[in-house]
Amino acid sequence: MTKSLLRPERAAAAAAVVTVVLWASAFVSIRSAGSAYSPGALALGRLTSGALTLGVISLVRRGGVPPRSAWRGIAISGVLWFGFYMVVLNWGEQQVDAGTAALVVNIGPILIALLGSRLLGDAMPPRLLAGMAVSFAGAVTVGLSMSGDGGSSVLGVVLCLLAAVAYAGGVVAQKPALARASALQVTTFGCLVGAVMCLPFAGQLVHQAADAPVSATLNMVYLGVFPTALAFTTWAYALARTTASKMGATTYAVPALVVLMSWLVLGEVPGLLTLGGGVLCLAGVAVSRSRARTGVRGAGTGVDAGASAGADAGVGTAAGVDTSAEVTPVVGAEPPTEDAPVGK
Image 1 (cartoon, rainbow, N blue to C red):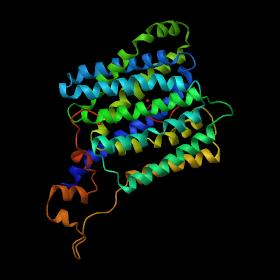
Image 2 (image 1 turned 120 degrees about the vertical axis):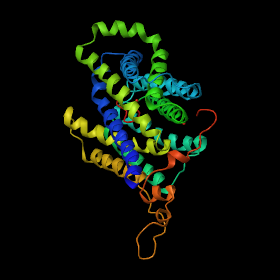
Image 3 (image 1 turned 30 degrees about the vertical axis):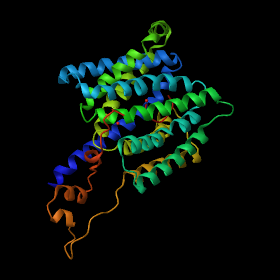
Image 4 (image 1 turned 180 degrees about the horizontal axis):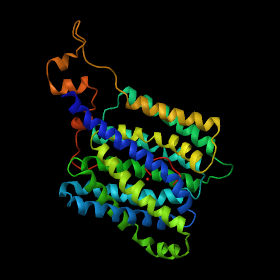
């Protein structure tokens, strides 16, 4: 019974790992695509590639149309996260350096925790709060170490802040929708909503695609297929099985992976301060994902009292399974990415 309870948790953890790795890999692709495409055109191209990929997968798997009750959350997340977030973040990163963008956008997971607690009833255990504090300190350290002289503007900072707010709002809106529709349905139609929202940039996309180097266009397609279609689906799968707050904290692993990938792929050797910040990010994620030991041990048996009683909830606790997804209340109204290291 313990093994059967652990499998879903391991699958969700694996999905979260896929998400953060692919979102971090977007850093390299954005460096190429962003130099040839304007913010709106890049967002539309990325979302179009993602929507087409997800559409094919949905047809093959016969995903179908989400139920009516899920549409509000899908629409809100599509507008805020898939559409507004990507355009505003692309624009903001043209105004500030990568470090400043990383620092500001990493306010997102904190906002997710606050909104999740207020709107979804997410628990805020001390370990989660402590882990997020450590990770945010690491993100600040990475951001400061990567910031260039005079590379920031007030407009850029405001745009990145708006991106962080949109990211948090999109995640919290998506959570209740996942209680009514599958991860594939929520991601497919959310991506489609975002693509429709970006249609005003179609003229720019067509014009710029004619002059863009092949490498930039291929990187834009990569962004749509992997960091969008695949990573947003694995994100939704994991989010459906845990709290929005905990998933938000998990994305703090992205800055550390961005530093590593920039080193390996772009040859950008990080300084000691940057490496230290990356280590702090990972340490904070480890703390936020850890669980305090619970349950009263039976005398001389070492068996959790809940487990010995054979109660499912007791077994889940003894096995260390996160049951927050089962107890998170769903709000009747639906409210649950670029160098930036979150929501890629």
